[in-house]
Each structure stands twice: as structure tokens, then as C-alpha cells.
Length: 235
Image 1: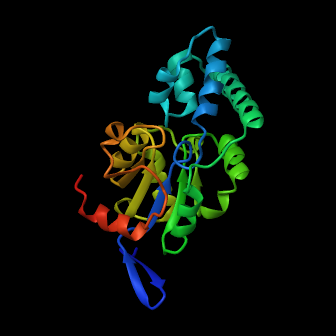
Image 2: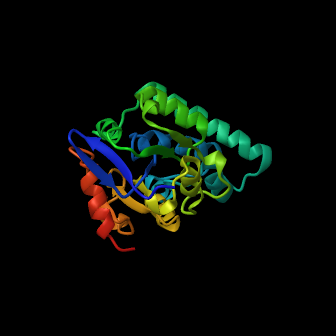
């Protein structure tokens, strides 16, 4: 496996030290946090359980099944039914309110296509939810690999989903860059031995300090500059 990626940029070669870029979906690429919270709130209400936004935020990046098992103590068919109901509520919210991408996220994805890197989506969301959202915002075309929460046993902050994405791309973990918005996702990336860039769409910079780099926006991003910075970042 090669250790460098080369991109022909007009008359000169740009050598990148990373071969794979792995992106989270909710909060990183799509502004789905509010819709997801409302779906959870409605589901918890079905079980006569109050659920606040403050309770919701630490759960970002965690698989829905893990949340239901831990918070509602449901297993088997009851767990499956709760997952289906939560998805039904989520579809209702998105159908009523719509959904949109994080500002400049698509422009960033387009810019990545200028480089010889593979692009993977690694989301804790189930494939049904991923398909619904990504089709609505038209971002599926940018990804070489898509990994969803059902495909790994352990959810974030365990590294499984990012390691699985790297293996599917056939890229070494130390040649991957993860882009995340949540502390659980940042921890998962670092546990996978990958560099991580965190964007402050859902969490403050203070909450994302474990990342190698923290950004506020995808606007006017130069991925080559990011790579240069990440090479100097120490774990």
C-alpha cells in the first residue's frame, strides 16, 4: 500500500500524506440535530420519560440501539419496535420541517475530489436514516465508501466504525483523517489511531479539545493546508 497520494494540480504535483478522509454525517455534514432530538423526545414520552436537550447532547454519535438499551432498558422485539418508532418520528419531523446541509459542506466535499484520496461516510445512524438524509441533500455522490451503525458491534467512542471504514477503503489507519462534530466521534477517531478534525457545529471548541484540529466552518477550506498542519500535530 502506498504511503503517499499524488494529485496533479495544473503543472505541479501536490503530495498528500493522507489517503483517506472519513466524515461523520449528523452535525458534521447535515444539520439534523434538532430533528433527531425531537424524535428522541417523542419516543421517550411514549415511555413516560422526560428527555431534555441537555440529556441529548452527550448522546451524539452513539448508536440509537445503545441509547435505547441504556436509557429504556429494552431488548429484543421491544428494542426493534422502539427503533422503528424513533425512525417514524424522525421521518415525520424531517417531512414537516425539511433538512439542510451544514454551510459549505458540499463545497468542501467537491474540493476533496481534486485530490487522490478516498472519501468515506461513517455514521452511527442506521442505513435507513442515512439514506433518507443523504438523498434529500444530494451528497451520496461524493462518497466511495459508506459505513453505518449496523455494520459494527461497538458504537462510538469505540473505534470500530472508523477502523471498518479504513479497511473497506484499504487505507492504513494512520493515513486517514476523520472529520467529526461530537466528542464521542473525536474519541473514536483517536482510539482508531487517526488524525481528527473537529467542527464546532454542535459542540464548543472546549468540548472538542481531544481533536488534532478544531475548525468553525468549511468555508474556503484548503485540504492541503490541513494536511500540513496535521503532520505537525502530536497525539
